Amino acid sequence: MYREEFHNYVSESKGNESNICQICAISGGEIAYEDSFRGFKPEDPINVNSVTKGVMALLTGIAVDKGTIKNIDERVMAFFPDYQVKRGEKTIYDVTIRHLLTMTAPYKGKSEPWKKVCTSGDWTKAALDFLGGRKGITGEFRYATLGIQILAGIIERTTGGKCIDFANRNLFLPLGIPEHTIHGDSSKEDQFDFFMNKGPRKNEWYSDPQGTVTAGWGLCVSGKDLAKIGDMVLNKGIYAGMRIVSEEWITQMLTPHLKLGERFGFMEYGYLWYKPYENKEVYAAIGDSGNIIYVNREMDVSVGVTGTFKPRIFDRVEFIEKSVLPLVV
Image (cartoon, rainbow, N blue to C red):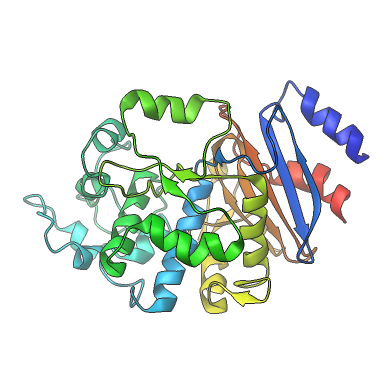
């Protein structure tokens, strides 16, 4: 499919591609393909939903590289000595950073307490209230967006500053990604608009009333920004000749730790990054509505795809491999 035909196909789609706003592919350190749709410009930021988690994995690795986090097997409660543990709760004392990164941390209840956390004055503390439970540490995979909020709290406790500043200084600006600010508002109405609004956003990151970024969602970047992050991961932590993250951390982050079930396409899972195939060097940070950082080491290409809110779209790996890669390689 030629590029003009592909542009028209995405632009006119009424199906799964009908919400795509930007596609950018980088190969050999250069932009090999870039296009935008539905009135978006290439540089327009979009809420990339759970791709944010993949960025948090990188920020955690940078904190480990700098020694502010000594070891990911450190217990979470060591970073919150002022937190008052609920009476009778014991499991929380055994939860480590590694459990958060692999989604094997245990939580109370059958579902995530979105209303309680997202209307609270301190989302990290509210997420800690959710952590633990009677079953203990089982090693079972439990996808919990709210639990990742604790990672932002740990980064702030260990670095002595705000997570947004740590991200700007150590990840975004070195990659040539515009400096980001916190979103500021966190009302119920604003949260709804943040998810549902189909227009471009600012270079911002959603935040709680404490000015702490939402670690599981809410980062607003462009498709080109996602591809840049992917290019850095592709090159084992180096971007444009500069070391951003240690090769050791990138390797650990992408190494499969769990095999997931049908809900997640039987993919493998590292530290908040997916490995879609057992026998291919393909990795991805995946978010709702088809937002994705796709990294293919075998073909030396990274792809960023952004999309506005559209339910029941999760995995764009197949779309990228069938429709985008042929335009690049």
